[in-house]
Length: 543
Image 1 (cartoon, rainbow, N blue to C red):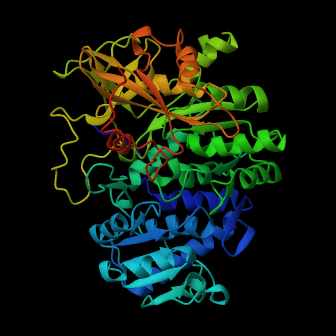
Image 2: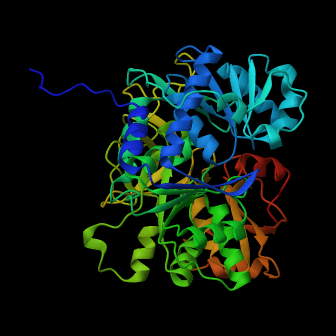
Image 3: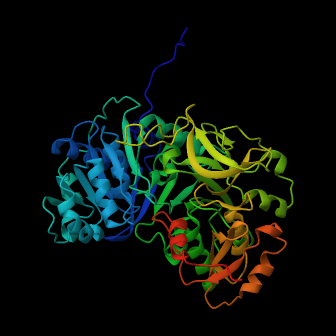
C-alpha cells in the first residue's frame, strides 16, 4: 500500500522559485572582469535566469542538450546554473585549469551546442576552435561595451544574448531524474570522465549540506565559495545557499588571491567560506604578513586534500575560526563526510578535539561507507583496520557519461570504489590514509603518506610537503619526503627527520628528505603524485 502524499518532483527550479518568493531581497556580491564589486538581489538573479532560459529556447535547444560554461565564480555563472538546468538542459561546467587538449576532449565528448565563457578564456577557445566544431554559439560573459574582438564565429555578449528576452518564463515540469549538470573528473589517469547529475541528486545533496551537523547554512549566513563553480557544483553551494537564503559573495578570478579574499570577507561580513587547502595557505600567509585578523569569518569547510593540523591550529589560534574538514569526489556530487564533533566530544580538551578535526569526518545521511580488504571482506570500524573505501547513496554516480557501464568503478553489489584507502573509528570518523594507487607498502605493511605530510606541514619552515614511495632493496618501498621551504626560512634534512621522530611510527620515518621549489598539482589543487613519481623515477635511496 502506498502512502497518500503528493508526488512533487525534486527539481532545481523549485529552489529558484522558493528563493525568489522567500528571499528575494537577499544580496549577491560578485567580483567580475568588468566590475570589481557587482551587487544585486536574489530577485534579480531569478529574473535574469528566466531571461537566459528564454534565450536558449529561442536559440533552439532541446531537452537534454548540453550547454558548456568556462567561467569563474560570479553572478552570470550562477544565472547559468539555473537558467540552463531549470529549463531542462544540462549545465556542463568546464575546468579552465585543465590542459587545452583535455578541454577540447571534454567539450567534444559532452557535445556542447552552446558555450558560455569569461572574456579571458577567448584566446584559449580561439586556439581550440578547429577541435570543438560541436559548439554552434559562443556567449561571452560581458556586455557589448566591453565585448572583446574575437575570431570565434557566432560569438555574442551575454547581455545582448539575454537582453531582449522577457523575465517571465514558466519553468517546465521535469522528471526529477532528468539530467541537470555535468562535470568531468580531472583525468589524472586517462581521459577525463563525465559525471552526469540529475535534479533529484542535487536537491537531496543541497538538503544534506544545510543540515546543522554538516555545513549548517542559514539565512543568517554570508557564504563565500572559493571552491569554483566550474568544479563539482561548487560543493552544492549554488543550490544550498539559495535554499536557505544566505548572502552570497563570489570572488570571480580573484579566488586565489589572499588579499582579495580578506577584503571581501571583512567588507561583506562573510561567516562561512569553502575551499581547498592551497587557497587557505594564501589567505593565512597574507594575514600573517599584513598583521591582520579575520574578524567576521566563523567557520570554513576545507576539502579536496587532507587538511594539515598546522592549518587548523592557525585558523583556531590566530583567527578564532572553526575548521570543518570534509571529503568527497566529483562522482559523489561531491559531499561524503564532514567533520563536526558529536555531543560527547564537546567537553574534550582543545588538543583532543584537534586530533579528531584532522580526520575527514563522519558520514552524512545519504552516504553509506564501508572499508574492505583485497577479498572484499568488510573491515571493522575500530580506527585500526585500513581498507579500500567504498560508498553508495542517492547522489553518487551509477556510471560515467557515454562510457556505457565500462568504467569498472562499481562492485558487483553496487558500491562505488572511491580509490581511497581509509580507516574508520568506532565513532564513525573516517580518515583517508592514501589513494590506492599512491599507497606505500613497506615490508608488507601500509604507510600513510598523508599522515606524514600532515606532520611535516606542522614545521614552521615548511610551506608544502608531499610523500611518495621509492624502491628499496630490502623493504620493497620506503617513503621519500619532498619539501618546499617556507619563504625566508631554512631547514635541513636532519631537522625534518627530528621533527617527525616521535610524531609518527618509527618505521614510517622517511628514508630521505629532498627540497624542491615546486610541487605539481592537479587542476583541482591536489598534489599530483603521479607526476612526482615520474620526476623521481631515477631517484635512489642514499646508502
